[in-house]
Image 1 (tube, rainbow, N blue to C red):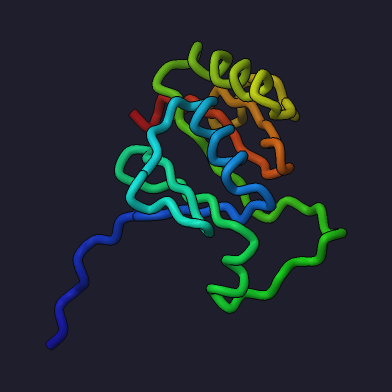
Image 2: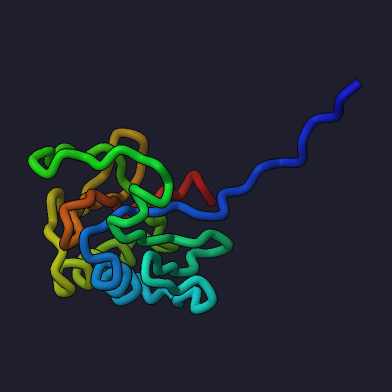
Length: 138
């Protein structure tokens, strides 16, 4: 009889970036995240966000991971990150920091259909992310 595995946790989430060092610096600046110094390499930078590492990988990661290299003319958003703010008013502060650091505001902070106060942005490389405050998560 087999036993169920232990609960899973999210250790890393990574963004493949043209300029991974600049992009990691952008998120470090906007959200005040600390660098995971022991993981710094010519291919990777990481930032602590709780117990998860927000990773930024160089284009060389495609080859290292045996992943297909995407077409350069494909601008579609395939994934996005959601950063959860502790307070509703914090959403606006993070939006201001993100835009000041070179991000683009796509949607102003607004009430969503599921009760979150949320803004949608693009980072300097065009990756989508949301800044969210959802009271029901608390």
